[in-house]
Length: 108
Image (cartoon, rainbow, N blue to C red; front, side):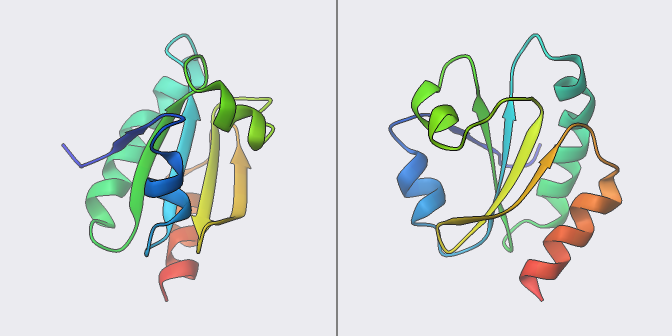
């Protein structure tokens, strides 16, 4: 399985905001059906973009400070961070190609 970092309020800044590579963050919850639908896609992308993009997950029920800071209102929400800033936000289930296209844009 791909390396996907579990984020919380204590490691978000170091793993995302201070990262030297783009970071794709999945805001999710255990009880969220659509979140479970995109989990395998997220894992596939993490394998395909290993070494080029960092992948991380935030459980919205446990990580309240970060969720509030980025005004996460619906899940799944996927945010792409580059140089410590959110550069794209996708809400809801998207096709894998949408995520791939987004990642290809930032690493090219």
